[in-house]
Length: 469
Ligand code: PLP
Image 1: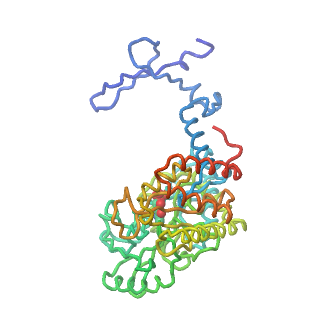
Image 2: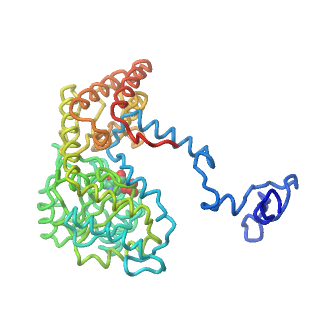
Image 3: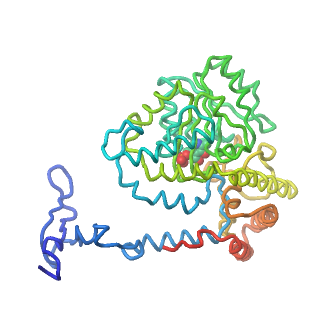
């Protein structure tokens, strides 16, 4: 016994950093050794350090570098105005499920049909997530395992298409998403993407879409966007798809919460397949989901696992289930309605200040604004607003003459600040600050003053009151 512990429990791992064996792997030899042997010591006590029962350790205690960064991030979230339209604040219950012991469990397969033992509780969790999602959106089949929105889209293509098939999807600069066939993605190399655009009024012209569908004979028509701010006519698009024998897919990642809250058209009962993220307006954990007609269920499940992924992240699925329960509450409708009301106020305030709103305005939670007439680029506006404590993102506008890293526009939205409880009065104040920051984008003192005002306002809308790292 040494220091009251068995000698084996104070074994130190000793590794010759830089030396590799014949397979070019780093050699790690566990030795019972003492410091000063000339080797780089990695202090490693297999029992006391990694036994969560005998050694309860807080994050702050064990890894202050990470804890302090998390605390700094919490302070940033608390003290700023989060206006990136794809971000939100999950509830403490969602956070708790996300940080739960469900992360320890392997459960490849689906409820009732797993490749691992001990899945009886996980099955309950995953089935609850599925059932709640079905109820929210009126879906015949749901797969809650996609790790995020991008893998959900890849799995959806694999489920519905053969390689080489044609997909008609929206151009990225007009509001589409990278995963809808941008040349930098793997999907664009596997499928033949043809891109439609919004018209001069900034709307989706169904006559043009029909003409393109007749010309290109797509196997799939894809709608659903990242920066488009208008309502979508799913029934009209479905009719075009029927005329040309195409399948239909919607990516409702951005607006799933608005649909769940009954504030926007729901593609799920109309389209063959719908993908979504669960972390934007839906206000769940970072993750993805596929909803589809029963006839596509088998192909979708196969495409997700084993087609694309391994073991599902059941802690995330537990958190999805909690978020779905929240989305089924009557209060969620009020939340979704307020997101839209807040975005409408911003629209009016910006129009009154001569801002150029893409697509003419908004029917959802976001605004895409061309800032060129204000004498700066999207990147410069993004930086100025950051300095003022208001987080937005630089964004391409339709047919942007500038580059993606320094585009003409900014994209901003209301889901996160609405979660904090901000309403019409705050929107008017915030629009004024955004305008002031853009006009004074080269004046650090003015930006710092706005930041101080932002901090004062956010104190009235506390975030994660009990949380501390
Ligand atoms: N689809 C749309 C419409 C999106 O806006 C996004 C992300 O912004 C994605 C898919 C991809 O989601 P993720 O970042 O979770 O992979």
